[in-house]
Image (tube, rainbow, N blue to C red):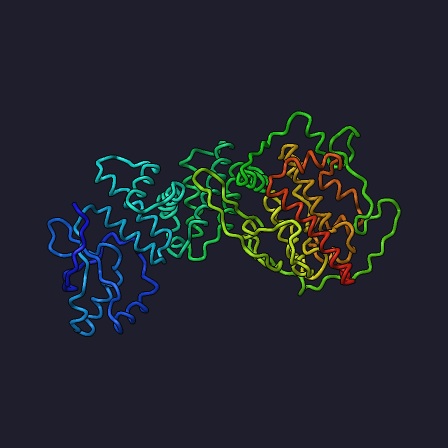
Length: 518
C-alpha cells in the first residue's frame, strides 16, 4: 500500500491514544506543553491512522501527550478550537510500523527512559514475529529489520535491552523506572557475568540457583537511589559464605574477572614454602628485604627525628561509599566507552574513578591541591582494580594526597596463586612508596591510622619485621616480572602516571618552598 498522507480535520473525540505508546511514564514537559497549546494552539498537526475494521482513529507517530492535552482543554473550556483539530492521515500498514513510528518520534523529542525504550523494542520484536509468522527473531535479524524500517539499533544495545527487560525489570522495577540507564545496566550485567562465573567455577550451584540469589539480592536494594556497590558487596558476601572462604578472596577474584582475567586459587606444590612471613631460604623468590628508613622503625640502630604535628581531624576527608568500582566487561555486545569525568578533590566517592581520563605529564596541574587529588585518584583506581581498594584513603592538605590504612588481608597468602599474590604485594609496596608511608614523619602517618591497623602497629612500635611478615616482600629484582609484566595496560598507565604525579608534587613543593607533611 502506498504511504500517502492526507490532511483532514477530525473531532478530538474520534481520536484515541496509541495503546502501545513507548512512553509509560508522565511526560515531564506536560505542563509546559499544555500552557503552550492553550495560548497558541498546536504548532504541528497530529499524525493519525485507522486500524482495519475500526471507525475511530489512533495516533500514528507520537502525539499522545498532545492528544490528552487537547481532550483536557476541550473539557475545561468547551472551545471549538480544541474540538476539531488539524490532522495528517496515513493509511494503516502494520502494527509494528506504528510502534516504530512512535519510537522514532520519541527519540527525536528525547526524554524516553531506557527501560521504556527497551520494552517498546521488545514489543516491536514480538509484533514482527507475529507478522512474519516465525517463532523467534535473532538479535542480528532484528537489528537488520529495524534498520530497514528506519530505526537503527546496534546488536549490543538490543542485547542490553533484552537483559534489562527480562532479567532486571522483574526485580528492580523502581530503580529502572526512576531512570536507571544503559551504563548502569551494563555494569550490573558485567557483575552478573563475573559473579556467575565464580559461582559455577566453585561448584556452588547451577544457573537457576544463581539466578534466584541474584534476584533476591537485587530486590533487596531496589529503589530510586540505586547503588551498585551495595549489590556487589552482597554478592561477594553470599559467594564467600557459600564457598566458605574469606570475602577478600572473592573480592580479588571478582575484580580479576571484571578486568577480563581469571585467577587460579590453587597453590602449586612447594609454593606454600615460598609464601612465608619471615625467614626464607636465600634462593626463594620471596626474599624479605631489610630496608632502612621505615617511618620510626630503627632497622640498623639509626635514629630519626619524627617531631611533626599530627594531622588535624577536620583536614581528613571522608570518602562515601565503597572503594571498589565496577568496570564494564568488554564483549562483542558491549563496546561503547563511557565519557570521561573531571578530576576532583579527594573527598569524593570512588565510583566514578573508572571514567576519569588522566594523561602522563598532564599540563595545567601546578597547584598541590590538584596534584594531590590526581595522585589519590590514580592510587585508588589502581588499588580497587586489584582487590585492595579499601586500603587506600584520601589525605587532604598533607603529603602526597593519599595514605594506606593497613596491609593486605593475611589470608591472601593461603588463597592466591603466586603470580596474583606477587602482583598485589608489589603493588602495595609501590603505593606505600608513593604515599611515603615509610619515609614520612611518624606522627603525621600514625594520626591517620586506626588503632587495630597492623601497619600502625609496625610503624608505632618500630617493628620492621612485623611489616615484612605482613606483606609478602619479594626481591626487588622481581618487580618487572611479578608486577610490570602482569599489570593490564590501564593499570600500567595509571602506575606510570602516579609516579609522574609524585615527582610533580615534589617539584611544586620545592619551587614554592612548601613542606608537604606540615
